[in-house]
Amino acid sequence: MEYRNLGRTGLKVSELCMGTMQFGWTADEATSYEILSAAFEGGINFFDTADVYSRWAQGNPGGVSETIIGDWLKK
Image 1 (cartoon, rainbow, N blue to C red):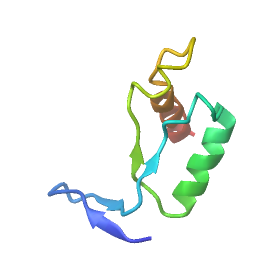
Image 2 (cartoon, rainbow, N blue to C red):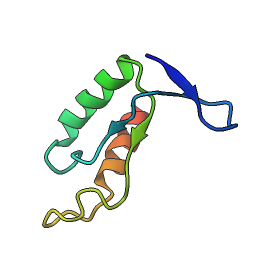
Image 3 (tube, helix red, strand yellow):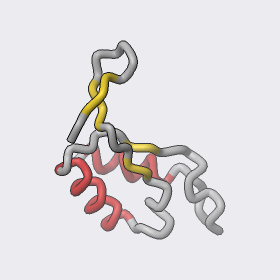
Image 4 (cartoon, one colour):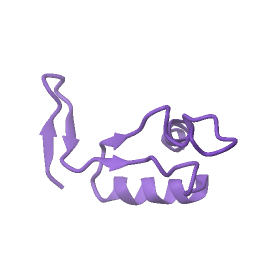
């Protein structure tokens, strides 16, 4: 995996960014964890998320992808 500097922060992020829009909507929590783990093991450390993801799905409050990523990071 190739990495780039994130501005002047001193942080290096993967050139590939993984989108998480499907988490909590078409990908349940367990599947999302598997995807996140595989991506991280492959060197990806740059994840795209937004609190509006999945908000359009009926009964979904939005922000679920952020919650799933946060819970995955705690493990």
